[in-house]
Image 1 (cartoon, rainbow, N blue to C red):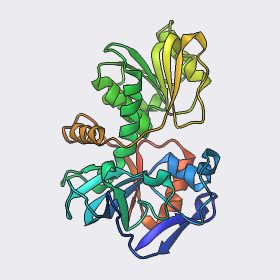
Image 2 (image 1 turned 120 degrees about the vertical axis):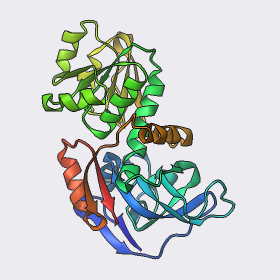
Image 3 (image 1 turned 45 degrees about the vertical axis):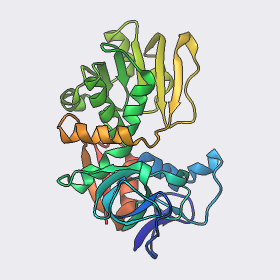
Amino acid sequence: MRAVVVRKYGGPEALETVEVPAPEPGPGQVRIRVEAAAVNPVDLFIRGGGLLMHGAPAREQTGMGCDVAGVVEALGPDVTGVAVGDRVLAASTWGGFNRDFGPYADQAVIAVDELAPAPADWPAERAAGLPLPGLTAWQCLDILNLPEGSTLLVTGAAGSVGGMLVQLAALRGLTVVALARSTDEEELRALGAHYVVDDVAKVRELLPEGVDAAVDPAKLVEAAHDAVRDGGQFVAVVVDGAPGDGRGITSQVMWAHPAREQLDALVELVDAGKVRVRVAATYPLTEAAAAHTRMAEGGLRGRLVLLP
């Protein structure tokens, strides 16, 4: 099979496509034939050696990818609840990304507790585009546990995680203030945003006391924190730290984790037309470096997806 790996950490040019035997699933794992693998910011972080800063050992080879959709073709020992031929999707993070091969490949080994059934009629890019942004948004909202009617600021609202946050927050009855370019206002209102601002300083013009909470996919940190009312909440998404708890604000850093029930619920919401998975572009697997380059440029309004 073909697999995209990193043998020397660096920029997009560090991605190599290699030919290797298909991996065998171990206990609690399945092997899937990959239909699509989505690109996430964490992939760029791993490619650049970011895991080393978090205590992970240096590796001779690191497999790439997290979000994936495909068809089960082999079961590991004692695996139950899934069968060969099942179509599945997953946010695959087993081993803390310390693995030789990941979902950027023709075939991939996935932990059973990371996957969920994927509807047969979904395009592969939709199935691969859902897991990590959906789980990240869901778990951020669970951390906040805001009552209906609360005000929530979402930075980077036009992006993949931000767009999921807008949709899920609106479904939970929150009043959503979306931070994005003015050209994104129509789209964000369609996703469920009540207000759209193009400058975080304008949040206080709308709500002089500040929002009840903020989730910060755009990594504005202090600027977004300043928009939160005294005693409110702030959630940073995949950064090394959050602002201190000044003004009585509770600040937390969120790293998404596999959660089968949440993934099942997200699939149901998308299948019912209540949540959209937006795809910006697809690339052949062999053009993973081009996809990484495009993601690094920013300004995406949906997922980038690799197709084997």
